Figure: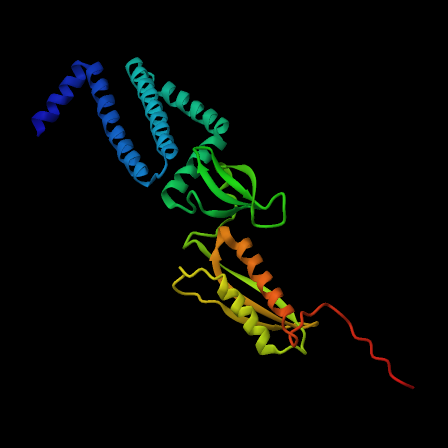
Length: 280
């Protein structure tokens, strides 16, 4: 072992160029191996062709950057100006870091999305104050099919919103469908205190069961009651697919109103005040 080290030292003393080139080659091979491992890990987590393309582009950019740095290292080493190399790389890094702050942060956020998966394509999310369905995740932006926007509802507006990846570290992200595709919703009906309370509950629960997704294994519809100033709130709660929320909600309310209109002893309450006049 000692003889091998002595031989390397001797070669380095006699042939500094060969020593520098050998160091550069070894460094490149090691770093390239690490890059390949990271690239394979990211490719396993991608689902679309565009995501795979982004990984390929990102790995090439890193590879080219690595080659440029090693070339600068080689030239500076052979020229004997290590201090110049350090100063040059420091200034270059500072300039690039300032100029590419947003793009670099965006790429870091994209890597976070690919590895941590806070949301995936097809999920309904709220990012900041923007609500939509994820239709694409690129190296720089998240593409959302806007929900609401032009109307006060949770139906698709037809517009596409591009969210810069760089802001994802600063915004609150709400994912409707991270655990599964169902969310809890409710249809609230306000009935008068004089109504047949049991019939009111049955009408609301039956309407909910009629449009309840039979594929849900648990989470059957149920009723919650709240006393209000003008009447009793009958809250029929149920699970529904996030993308079907408004349609199911509308169908349930239509069914409740139709059935209440056919029932004599159940009345929908309206906000009102009673004035009682006392005789003198």
